Image 1: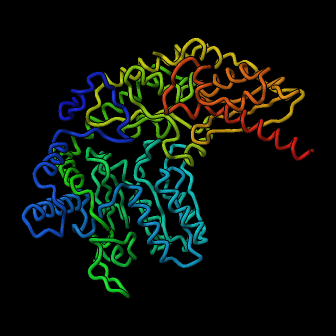
Image 2: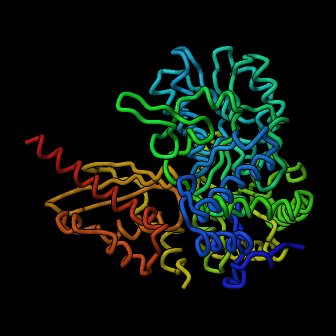
Image 3: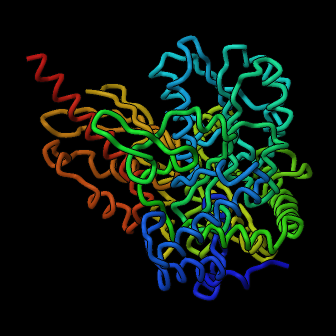
Length: 406
Length: 128
């Protein structure tokens, strides 16, 4: 079972085997129609217009804040900031938080972070002279709460940790990680990159024990250009603004400006209105499918992929991350002894099989793995992936082995 | 058309000009950090010509086959001519258009060779 029929791209690309949903997911018809509806029926700007079209745009736009809040079980829509993507959400935090920290602060990230949850912290730490710590993952590709205690100190102000690794497929125990970190420093801020989890597992920010959570619309069946930052209301309001401009101000005088409160304080300029509205349809689509069904489809295809890859390529394939029988995100990164990841992806591309090859924006992760080349191939799955897509991948990889056989 | 033509695979699996030179005018190391392609190249310049050239490296088939094809082509050529080599030269050597995503891999060896020539020339200027 899969939900291929909901995604019109498959009618236009009937031979495509799409195994790159970790990079971006495909879009269901409902989302595309919702965006079209905005552009064709009420494409006015939000907030400022006193006429009905603008009022409709504003109410549709703000309704998505409510949907998003309910989706992650936040306390309310004013905890939801719309950004451009996860990277911008995390940059917003790095820029504003680091302004408020004293000189002897420490910032901790993990070796499995995507560059977007690594580089902003590293750069701010360099700029401010903070100690910067990157925590390694264990042999099973996990960040264990016990490991944290060796790296976190009472001076560690931030722990930036991904929920799901976009390369290893590890699902990190955020709740335990938050608890362990806060036992050392109750004031530490836990910042979670949920870009890879939001479309696959239900998020309950209250239970995760984190202080901030960031994710992107385009990885969860929504349009590009929309990111979300969730933060507790008081902390959000205690932060300085990130970008200045229209919409984020209450009043402007020659000598000073009074800013709005969160979330609008962090949303300078005209937002991606049509895209945010489309994102709302994506969230409703996920809810209509249900996480139980999502899990059923994805775990069955992921397990099948893991078993087939092992069965067919045996010693010649290295699958990254936790053992294939441990619950994981719907993805496998791997290396084949026969060929470099780029060559693998290129051979597959000739048969319309879309996978990703390279460092997947995780050079520190690949460095820790001490591979021959700091690169891997990655196949990732979603609710439209079928077993026959995995079979096509296997046939494609067999072709790779044949081409590169000496 | 499959880019892994016999020519490319042959140069990848049996690289020409592979190894180190006993006498050389310079050696240079270059890599693509994001994908791990590495080229170490050496040249021997005599009378403004590349009298000898050799490389070692690791990485994808495109990066290594390009290096092999380039070294073979450059050997015996005038330094002035090699300075004119560009992306088209490499594509012609490979015999196939490889698309924008792989150009970085294909051009790594040419970049190495150009850096080698620049370094060798700077050294000879400063020695004078």
